[in-house]
Image (cartoon, rainbow, N blue to C red):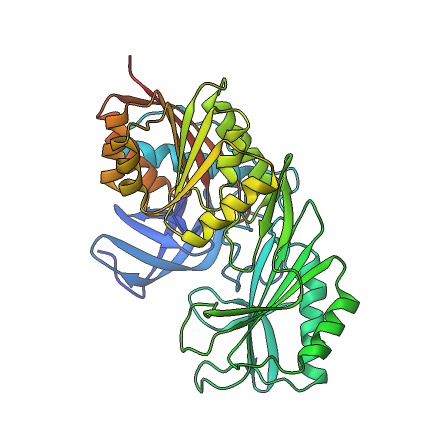
Length: 451
C-alpha cells in the first residue's frame, strides 16, 4: 500500500496537462514535477488521493534519453516553461501523442493525427509579455510568477520572449531606481507600479509598453516617456492603465495613451492587424501564419462558399478566409474585439467579411432563421470548447465541412465525439506548436459530413 512521505521507484511514461511527468506505482497514477518520459526516478510521495498521487524527485536513477539541461537558469522556478528540460523533438512527439491519446480516451475517436508542426528556432517567439513588479527586502523585482505562487522570480532576460523585452525591463528598473518610484505591495495594497506589459510586432518592429499602476497618476510620467523613447528601438506607443482594485486581474478599466498611437501594427502573411493594449492576438506571430495556412488548406475554398467563423476574436482567421471565400460571417461575444475586426477588414480592404457581436450559439441561430447558412464552419473556441447549443445549430445547417481550431485536446475530443455521433467524421488532425517549451498545444481538425 502506497503511503504519503514514503520513497518509491517509478518510470515516467507520459506528460500531464501541466507538463508534469506521469507514471504508475502499483496501479496508482503519480504526477511528478519535472519528470520526463523514460526517466527512472526515486520519488517521495507528497500528496496522496484516492485516484492519484503527487511526488517530488529525490534522485534520478537513470535519466531519459530526452532529458536535457534547460537553456534558462530559472526554468525550474519560473512557471512559464514547464518542459524546457526535454529535447524539442521529443516535445513535439509528446504533444502529438497527447492529442492522439486524448481523442481516443475521451472522444472514442481514432483519427489521423499528423506530426506536430514545430518551429525551426523554438526560442524568442512571444510577441506579448506581462511582467509583475514587486519588492523583497527592499529590492525591486521584475519577472514572472513562480509556479503556483505570487512570488516573483526576478529576471532580466526570457528565452521565449522577444529580445526587446530585455531593454524594456532594464529601462523600467532604471526609472524605478532613479526616481524612487514606489512598487505595489499585494499585502498592504499600497505602492504605485504593478505591472509592465509589452507588445511587439514581430514583422513590423513596432513596440508598445503598458504601465499598470495602483495610482491615478503615473509617477514621473514625462521622465519615463523620455527614457523609454531614448532606449527602445521601434517604440510606437506608451500606455498607462489604472488598476486600483485588490484583484489578480492585470488590467483595470481606465486606459490612456500617453505617447504615440493607441495601437501598433503587426503583419501575418500579406494581412495587417492593429493591436491595442488589451486586444487578443496570437502570441506567436511566426506560427500564427502556419496555423492559419493550415486552416485555409483544410477549408480548400474555391470562392463559392459562405463561411462562418465562430469565436472570431479580432477577425484574423476571418480575413484569411475572406480572401478565398464568397462571404465570411465572423461572430464573437466581445464587442470591442468585433470593432477591431471591422477595423482590420477596412485596413486590408476586405469587403466580403461581416462581423456580429453576440453569443455564438444565439447569433448562429438568428442567422439560420433568416436563411443565412454556411457551407463551411470554422470554430476557434476558448479552452472550455463549444457549447452544445452551438454544435446543435451547426448540425442543423448541415455544412459540408467544419474546421475546428482548439487549444484544449480534452474539450476538442468531447466536441468531436458529439459531431461524430451526428453525421460527421474527423478526416485529420494537425497539431501546431504555438508555445514551445510549454505543455500547451494547438490543433486544427478537418471534419467532413458523411455521405
